[in-house]
Amino acid sequence: MVAAAERTGGPSLALGLASALLLGACGSSNGTGTGNAAPAAPAAPVTSATPAASDPAASTPTAAAGNAGGQPATTAAVLTRAAQGLGSIVTDDKGLTLYRYDKDQPNPSKWTCSGACTKTWLPVIVPESVQTSGVQKSLLGTVHRNGETQLTLAGWPLYRYVGDTAAGQTNGQGKDQEWYAVTPSGQKSTATG
Image (cartoon, rainbow, N blue to C red):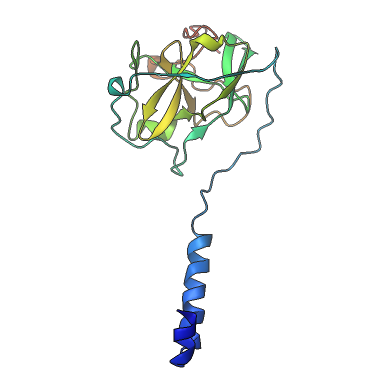
């Protein structure tokens, strides 16, 4: 193609094509950031778990998961951490509190937070294997969500709250009397932070 462009006196055409390809490559960045939050120190040895996948038919996707920037809340580890006034709760690998939603269903796992809801409550998207510390591996699972894999604990789909911007915060606790920090057994923490 470049040779043909040069024969027809079109070096600028070849340069234009090369520029277009380079600009296209630059625009394909996935834009995922890791944030500045310090990772939580594990309270116990970290082990690897492959969450069990739930029945895809039980989790019919209705809207894209993500935050205001369109990126899901991804995590590669779940840890147990003590939170003032809440006891032991589960956090992601950055120390951010994980929540469950009373309107979701645990058995079979089914999420109901979609659309605008996912701008405030970020579904926790995970890779194939998740590191754990203080959380029983057999309680971890996943549910399919718009081509991604959302983490579940005791069947409950897990979320992060956009209002928690630093490790250890529990600003989503008790929101709308439907959102609660999740305990290592998958129960909701009913204490108030």
